[in-house]
Amino acid sequence: MTRSGTAGDDAARETGKSSRAVSQRLIAKWAAEDKAAGRMPMVDYVTRYAKHFDLPL
Image (cartoon, rainbow, N blue to C red; front, side, top):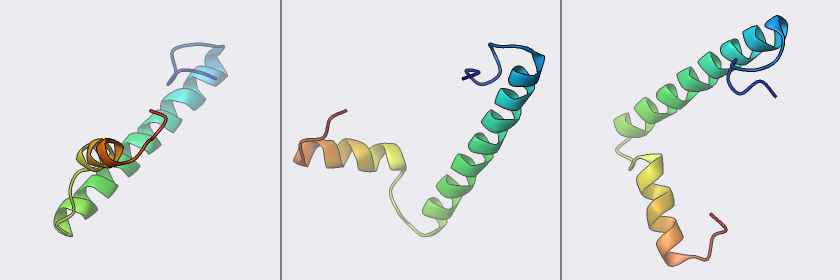
């Protein structure tokens, strides 16, 4: 595990940095798609869901 490119040897750090960049782009893309479709943000959804169901958060 590289903790987003902050630990490990040089190769692990580069892998972690690129993985983090890809994940950030995907999250931003999904958030934009949700907003365009009129859906609530993921954080609001999970918060609302957790209030009504017993989730191990």
